[in-house]
Length: 208
Image (cartoon, rainbow, N blue to C red):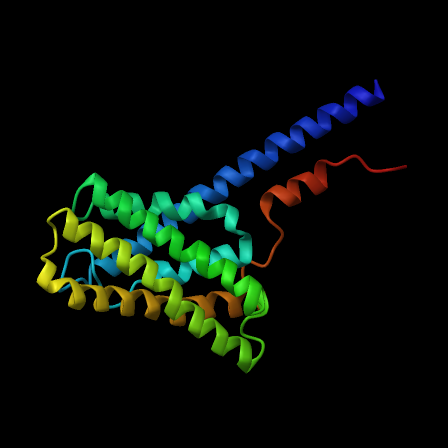
């Protein structure tokens, strides 16, 4: 009977953890979508290229703080935002892929070489973060503008101006938004345990 109770608690904890993870994915995707729409409202040279792209900074901060396993939320948030703005499903998928790779690669490089969550704790790590951001954001710009040009939604002679605007917009998002969110985290903002971890901690059987 005791073993059955323990198994039931574990099952509930697992179910609760899955639901919490799904809720977190949906929340991140929705916030990304809202940030993307706000950024796209400033587009000028091309409907998909904006001088500042806050979702880059948001996605990078979320993956650094909460884990790279949240990358599907970035993809779906970017996909829906672009599909409801301009281009085709093909270009929207390509752009979403670029946005996701940008965040994942940036997160992995920051974790490996710039202190991860502590990337803004020392001047050296800050400099590394800036260099990583300059590199990872080229992925989104290259894949995004390339897909638009191939799909006929951007003219090849305008490739460089659009690419530059895209890259600088993503870079601005990374350099402005990511530090704000990570420093806020260290100051106590959304620093609580993940919902799934909290549920498991409460549901786990205690030794007597």
